[in-house]
Length: 62
Image (cartoon, rainbow, N blue to C red):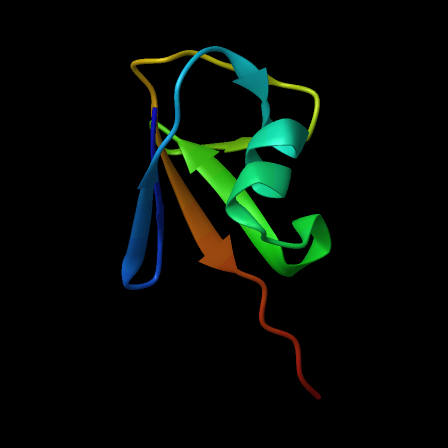
């Protein structure tokens, strides 16, 4: 699968959950939103080898 975050991208092999994918690319789960085909995913969703996933940084402020 292809994972894109800002100016970085990774190619990962095999099926895995969103949580496992975030661990492999070294991103802290609470700092990003994970999107596949325009839909927001939760950590328990199973990703397929042919998926393209985009990570969007969570921004907060006041």
